[in-house]
Amino acid sequence: MSVEPDNVILLSADALRADHLSCYGYHRETSPVLDGLADESIRFTNAYSASSHTREAVPALLTGEYPDVAVDANYRLATGTIASRLSEAGFATAGFHSNPFVSRAYGFDRGFDEFDDDLHFGRHKVIALAQRALDKLRNRHYARAEEINERSLSWLDSLENDQRFFLWNHYMDTHGPYEPPGEYQQQYHDGTVSDSKAQSLYQRAIKDPESITDEERQVLIDLYDAEIRYNDERIGEFLEALRERGLLENSLLIVTADHGDAFGEHGYYEHPRYLHDEITHVPLLVRPPGGVDGQAVSTPTSTLDVAATLDNIVGTGGKSEGQSLLESAAASDMADRTVFLQARGEDEHSNRRRYALRTSDGACFCERDRESGALEFTSCASRSLREDLEAHIDVRVRRENGEGDTDDGAVDEEIERRLTALGYKD
Image (spheres, helix red, strand yellow):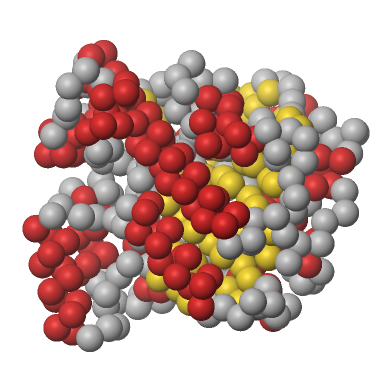
């Protein structure tokens, strides 16, 4: 498939699992906008994130490298991104989001001409303090999708008419605590759940998952689905704004997620550092310029493939660990492709790293003790998959180059506050 886009648009949603979208077979109509987009896109039905949590998943998405080399020991960006490569190729580059883990504090502004991470350190102190006070008052811990849309559209409107661009919008609405506006809640849940109750339930699900009753689990799912529906409509508004500006038809559009969210399927909620389907199987839609007749591709794919696709199309010379999604869609002999995943242990200082692989025939999971080198295979569909995963781990261990030990000091107070609200801190 030959594609020569003027622009590249990457839309990612935080904690959006594929099997809760109606275009991926979910029983609720949660994603009418994405359903319509799928009708003019290539939909990858077996796409997996390279990791299960933002600190390793987003770096993999933006670099095309596995997390063990994409970030250092402190989760700072450690290699070049597609933003850097596209910038060098003459694209204007911008990123808009509000996840502290991939903020400028961790080096993720590298390669972006405009990088709005919704954090106010480094700006005028009085303005920053006033913003913090306002955020606390209104219980605000991330920018809603309409804010991300408004900021990114304003940037697009500032460009010269013939300026090629790369735009990355990352939406936080589907990340917990799930606090959808009341009119969205009521599509799936009788009555309205207050934000404070939603936060309390979400935090308890993380800290004490066994205490969550079946009824409470359903409330969490209802609220999550409502957030998906809300975010879906905001994406629809953004796509319509692109159409009105004449920017959609000549752009390559990719929609995906950094990871999913769990609801007790394996005894945990949210997205701890495991590699099960509920937190790694993500949506992945690719709409070439002008669109295509809807196509579903079952070949296993990885979020590493996003960078590989852009490198291939634009000719940036990047060396992604992935494969071009457009080539995967065009090939008829890739059904047996193997994709690999990894995550550090739950404790940031853990010596364990988890690995997994997925093929059309099954999956395999393993944990490695980084001190002793011992491997523990927790589940494998076949002996051959176990051998494949063991060989992959050997390659990754050889590639891992002593993740740096530097400590850049305390993370900004604003980051700490937002991480606490998002369930990352006690």
